[in-house]
Length: 379
Image (cartoon, rainbow, N blue to C red):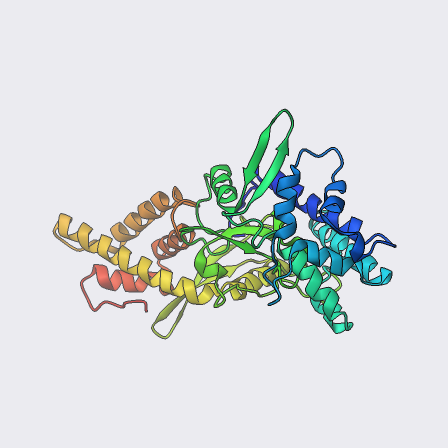
């Protein structure tokens, strides 16, 4: 969200997977359809004229969900859903449609609610909540895992094998100017796919390309974003106070400011626009940005101190304040070339620019260090 990112070509393959989910769900939820009607032949009939092989559909039908200890297969889950009362089946189908329409709210400005399985549970529909989670989530886990994947049909060509590892490779290729984590600006490392809206609550979006965000391990961990829900579910517009990695980027809408508290320097995302500031505050809380940036900033301060030391040793004498500020500006300009490519380059650039302006929160410890006095570590 701190950077503008683009969907890779494989997003079309994921939309095909979503279409596969929808076709099976709509067929299962037809009035009069019962569990006794659902078998492999029935699944095959849901895709007339499709080039997906019956053998692959058979493997799909045997996939087991990762939600319930019973480990029910896709086929068994469809049979369970088919036996629900018609009003429950209609609700499951409508929830699926509403979840996908919700994503259109960011562009249309017409607010939609994102239905979650917790509402099914609140209404006493525990079996329906468990079944729809098991069915829809199985298309991601294990369906999208590297040792499973999808057989994407292609006209006059062999079917394309498609899985999570390949999708991440396509993402990196499409976003060559953003090789850092879009949540925190840190190193992406071995990227993971985060469900922006957690699949346990919103299984309808388990495979939607706009809900799968390549992120670093730290952002995706339980300690940080984990399964937090970036929505105000009871608000008139649940997404109003939040950014979205693809649909509402923070890029260009903020500046990084610094404040000194005791012996610590903190970086803060700032905007003069109140709504943007609210979204920045929510993002900071969502991924634990204040705490993590404090650690990253400490390392950047030490690195800058080391650069000053090396520069002083080459020149044989400490820099004057004016010369030091000029050098900091030069390093800031160099750092700007690394935006999106090196971890925390946004943070380092803002720190160097602030110090070059002689802002108290960032400059004093560098000046003290450059003059050869006691070092303030910044920790």
